[in-house]
Image (tube, rainbow, N blue to C red; front, side, top):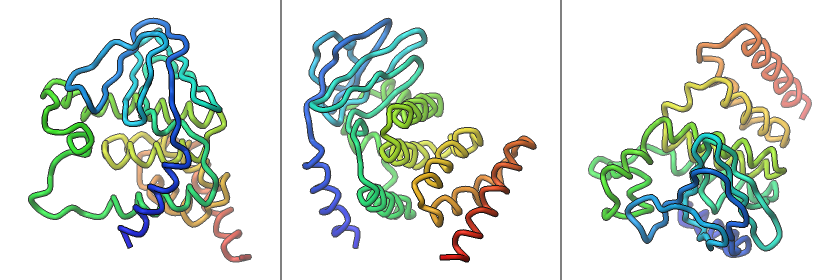
Length: 227
């Protein structure tokens, strides 16, 4: 099953594959590519590959353009270039299925971080420490939210799932969890959003957050009953 999903996802990635270029930047913007073991300064007109990670500091931003879309990464944010894409609902469902597979417990002896898997063993300890930090996970959640703000809601959902898998401590942030659960709900994926809201309900919530989650769970129950 896992191999079947991987083949389908590979086919989708080929369809969406495109070239990205830095059009405009402000402040301190860095990138990490699979060909380098350290962060590099981003420059105007630089070509970006899909596996590259782009990160902005405070009061910094970068405009990234592809063949048919553009995306501005705002301050204190990070994103994997491959996430900058439009997806159909069917592609989202397929990607969510793969995320469920990726979330299955790993066998003992296979404890390398996801980031080591992408960037290889040559990556420096300092760089890997930054990549694996909870603070960087929060920067990536900021980037995922900005995908949704730019109309790429399906990609935003998958980007958030990747972050929650790689940075489990970020799942404690109720505000972000609710934001992405609402995106799932808005996409009509009621069973998936129900699971999210159920998990969120176990977190320490403010009164308005608890009311919001309870209301969504009630709405979903009604929708599923009337299916």
